[in-house]
Image (cartoon, rainbow, N blue to C red; front, side, top):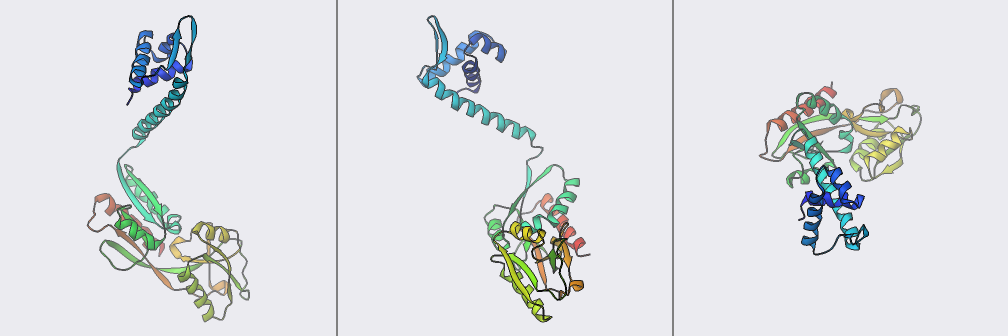
Length: 285
């Protein structure tokens, strides 16, 4: 691996094509720049800069190619150093959760946790609930906050949460209107809950839109094109809930749980888990 100090001298020399100006930029003497270039040329077995003999200094073809890589190496080195210097702490919690929860209750949990734990960095990965446990078992995340996946070691809490009808603020829905709905392409459970509830009260619902991603579902809702079904804790402004006034029936409840890798404990994980649990119970009122 070439010496970084020599690389910096070479790059400056390649930019200026003048050892004297290169030395001024590097706050050193001309002989040091010359020695750095000679060292690199010896290590590489190639001439990088043609100089002397009455000709102006210029890069050889090998020097031009090496200059590209040298700048890249120095850029990555500077970036790595700056990144490490800017990180306030190496204490990291890796949270796995769903997109819907990440946009709602997790926001308040992060805000509350950060006030007392400013030296802890949170990394968030989003995935479907049924995929997060596999990530937890594989060691990719430390905590998984999602729809309950059943009793297993490491389940910190489970709380029942009512499902609600979520809509945009401009959706006009009369009690006699058919109900436009939007769900995930493979969101069969929530879709089933919605249609079952509407059937109970003799209300007609229809699948107006589908999306393979929760952001797409949210886009249709915010565009006032359809309603969807979400846990109550996930409905945050500008979303609103609809219900009896629009002739919509009550929905079932679902369970939200937080899991951690079995046997893995730390004070930070305990505190963050407790913060999320507190936000869930506060949202339940």
